[in-house]
Length: 344
Image (cartoon, rainbow, N blue to C red; front, side, top):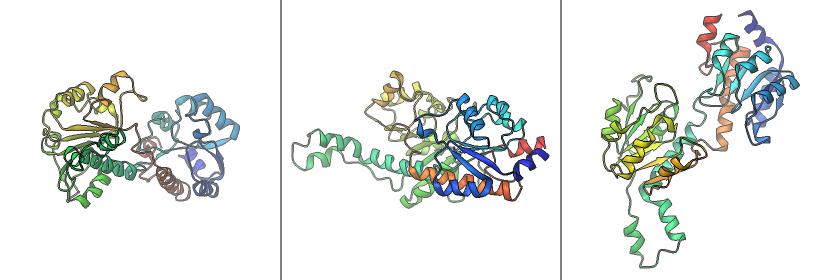
């Protein structure tokens, strides 16, 4: 605990490899002393383990803010004076949190930074699917409107989102933001999440089977864990309405890909909206899904907005201020706070 308190008090250089706006960097300078800004965007890829170690040593940085770089046990061993790690992601999956905790190093993260971005894309893609905007756009560009004005009207007549039952598998920041936006469409929200308390009176917490059996749209919002790998399989797909749409903007591996492919090829459901794939960029096995006519696919873009970068700056800087100024570990976005308290 003494070492941790020293870290809180000291002036230091913070190495920032995540995209971080100028205002956010100025706040860090006021808080810690100086900032070395070397975003991964400068080279178009994440820094390797050895490059991160080299940068930390070259800048004499005692704080690290990252987005994509792998921060391993070797990094912590090579730079023992590291005071904290800030991760600009919804989960600090690129950091060896256990190794950081053993050394008493706080790991901050930014849950919900992309919630609005993903929620807006969900709404946009679902409406696009229901109203055939993507396919009709290509049809028009291909010069296929060669009959009277009723040709397209009949061919691409779709459905409204309003009043649909939307089921959420996982009801964290993203799921809750989507639910909030869907209230404008008078949608009925059902959700399954064993880790979220039933304290959302405007929405209904139900079983996983119920989500699949009653929903017009099923949307998956799950992290990759041992518990979720391959969780969504044929048994659940077989419960869906024939008119239902399956949406996945979280992680491809939480879904049994072969089962999804079969259910779509057999037209057991209306279709799928997919933003994530087993391999990125996709391989031949992924294109079997992507190429289906009843699939609307996007290249992992749901969280890709410029505003997301502003959101992670706000979330992380707020946490670092509390840690540095208030000398507390009781911070919601301190990922390993319980482990640090135990170690202390």
